[in-house]
Image 1: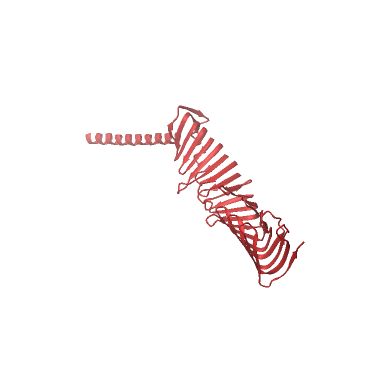
Image 2 (image 1 turned 30 degrees about the vertical axis):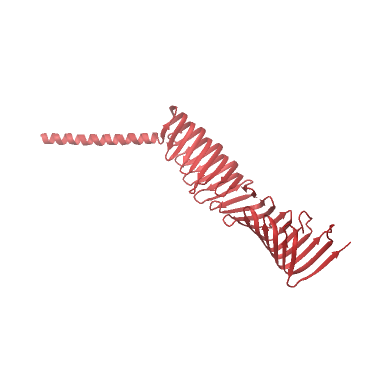
Length: 369
């Protein structure tokens, strides 16, 4: 009888323990569901129940974690059933290598989406400790996908490539290192000699190692302007390919071809290669009128500090040179055709030598008054 009583007591104790354990797990589950965030600080806390949802109002020096994401703000409302947080005033959000700042932020825990408004500033830290930043009036950040969308008065900066961007709309896919700028986009490399690209759309791949600009493309510097419908730029090689009726304009000469290939050094053109239906209209000396021209199948120009020093034209070369009369020289006109033409330019930006080669035919006029 005693053994039977002991067995019953032990059985009752086990059932009680299991019940308490179940109750504890239930209470913990309810509290976890009710409090899915971890509050660090708030000067004032108010909890209200509205339509079956608990809303927690946090006021003053607000600091909390929602999952792995850290939040700071002046005020915050936490909607516990909806798993949503709404923050106002000096909002700061920290997520791994990304820091986000705004006047107002809505955060949806289940979809891991953040909507930021008002003086938004985003900073991304790269593995090499360089930073990329974004400024806009509105930003959407999708945490799971690591996608960022910025709208209205967008400004971007990449420290590694020293690139400044401006546009009305920007999309950035962090996992792929790919993004694009729309609505009057402009990219600038600022320095002693600035270089600027504008177009209808500008894309960057592999973290700005490759840039693609399409439609109404304009590339400008202090020395030149290039227009085209398509631009492909390789950052490491400092090489640009222009297609779609590219045209080059400068004080010394203008040019067009089916394709341009430009090689830069410190934002100045070092070499230019023109392919197919090449045409150049130029002045024979600095500050003179552009009365001379050359056409050919291929042209290669070499530059020194932005000034043309050498030209090599090949294939079906047709040329016309016009030298005006001055106090020191007479009027001279030369028209010639051949297979190859080489021109060198002196230090004072005057044509030094003209060398037409192979199958040369032409006419030279010399007028002395």
